[in-house]
Amino acid sequence: MKITKLISLIRPKQWIKNLFVFAPILFAGQLLNFQILSKNFLAFAAFCLTSSIVYIINDIVDIDADRIHKKKRFRPLASGEIKVKEAVIFGFILVLPILLIISQLDIKFTLVILIYFLLNVLYTFKFKHVVILDVFIISIGFMLRVEGGAAAIGVAFSNWMMLTTIFLSLFLAISKRRAELSGTDNENIENQRKVLEHYDISFTDQMNTVAVTGTIICYALYTVSDKAVTTFHTENLIYTTPFVIYGMFRYLYLLHKKNLGESPEQIVTKDLSLIINIFLWFAVSFIIIYKPKLTGFFN
Image (tube, rainbow, N blue to C red; front, side, top):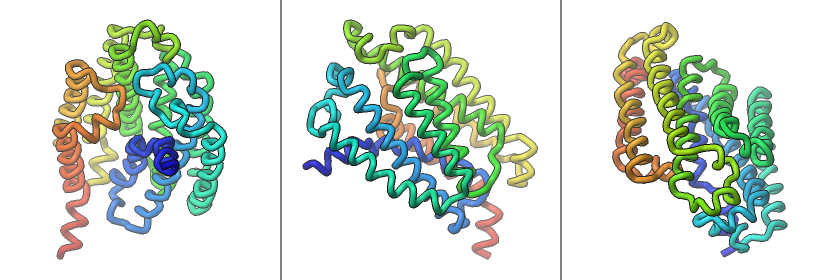
């Protein structure tokens, strides 16, 4: 059905990346404040719809390259199941609910979502062809998700957590490049993604070493920072660090030994060990951060 193909066009599976907008409310200790949480859900919806428009633009621009890719050739536009004109019309339709959502949120959020959109459009047309800058632009996209979540609910976000986000998103972007290199037909590499000509396995592995180290160190430093200890009245958040370390190592294992990583959203939603680890990290973090509020609630 045409509706099914239109839904496939906006890649709802990749909306999982937009869960980063919930990071500020979790670490602000306001996750149980449902009035504030409702604003966070609006921010999440806005990023999902905006990223969907970006995917449509990207698929229109890359339609020829996608047709020779072993997996991307099955995308609605590349396969011809959706016409370019239909995709453009659908993209304009998605603008309407975005405008409605941002009208309910702070002007700072509107600015963040606008920057996010413009940056991704520039990435589609130019930056994705520039070595190293391409992965940094992807990283900035995750930062803007976090900034958007903070702006939507009017809270400040820790600098250490922002640095953690930078390194983590760089790790995901670099891992994607590595997976593309190891899984792409070398004869078509230039036509499928030109920037891959400037990368190799060794180079991406070296960059990932820095990204993994940065993620773990910045997160650990956040858990013992004055801001975290003062906000949560405990130093116990440090005990969530092993989950972060395991998650990074597990992802590296899947990248190196299973040749995964080209679709981060699939790894996060299909690898049972990673799913359990993320759940345990969230559960332990939630208990540590919200224990005083939960105690008061039940008493």
